[in-house]
Image (cartoon, rainbow, N blue to C red):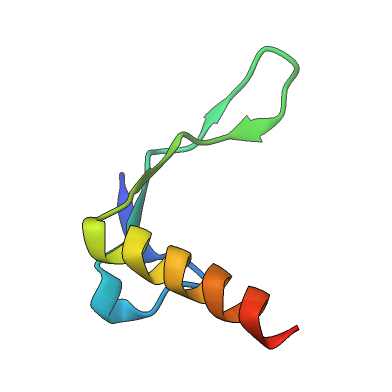
Length: 58
């Protein structure tokens, strides 16, 4: 079972998604799952612009 979810902090138009694999039990008994986040060029541009705007407004 896998799921595809939005990433908090990035708008939908940036195309950033995270894929979550099926949960499994680790060696120490904790429930864990592998998470993969795919960043797009739009997302990188958005992060740079957001960082620059915060720098200019302070």
